Image (tube, rainbow, N blue to C red; front, side, top):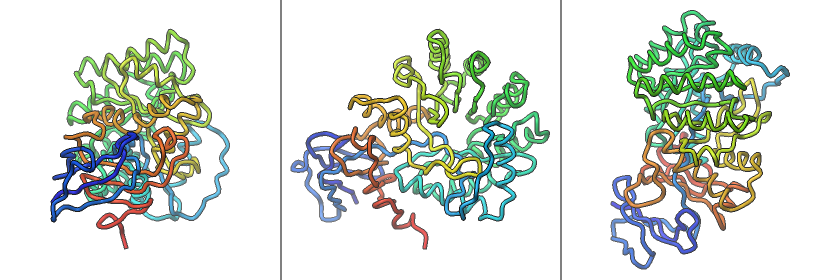
Length: 403
């Protein structure tokens, strides 16, 4: 049986089309009058709504989310890594739902908002063990019909400063995690080269991705990017290494910006754009022109560290555009591409839009133009995963919904 989406405006096109889907793939796109439905086809009328590729969430801390839990008063004011460490451990000790249940709520919210590909981090530390990793691996399987979820074992409290973490990361990879992370190798663990040895060594041994959160600023942060780029090229890991929260890109000199963008592009390191309250968003237009693969991420949603975040990648595109003060439709449409097809490229997938041969991972939204969707994100009318409707009007439906 085929599914035919009628009267949809593909990526904001002026004229509506019909999208024919078979076996989870877009088979054909043509004018409505040129597509004749068979008796067995499922026909869905889109009423002129805009159809975009499914959103890509390249940086989701699902295990930290307290979405759906009773509101917890946040009183810590120091914005430091030490405070984040304290908040992380305090949150794990709170009387709340299991990490599985909290993560599921958050990931379901991401899917209902249009994310069909998600890179999810799971904290690993001696005080935490592998509970978060095992919850995320379980969700990766249970929610496979809703989203492609990649699980990154992440040392949120550092590696060297928490003896036993390296062994736990290795165990997480042996259990099936898709990648291994590193946090501030210089700023947190104070031995960047040793941390790179560990993370790249584990990634190479297990044949998985490596992903670094790098909050080091200024020249130290630039030095770290250079070292990661060197390792990436030496090991032939281009396309399998990512970096998030690269604060060295927040306010660089022109020389440093050119150096870092060249390092990212030449090594094949993907950059997950951080949209933080305190820091400016890097010049992502210039990064793209330099050949850097980029995606957006929801980060966390209502953790003890921060009450902000809602799992909506289109809202992240809006906040990024606002902080860059983008006003033209060209720029706003580019923001939507980062959330969709360019995000697929950053995660090593084919950078496909809504076109024949592409996976039928789609989001349908009401609006006049793509730029309008970014400026004022509406509720998602439909979300499709491999051609199956999994969410409608912001709620999961069918097999995706839980009683």
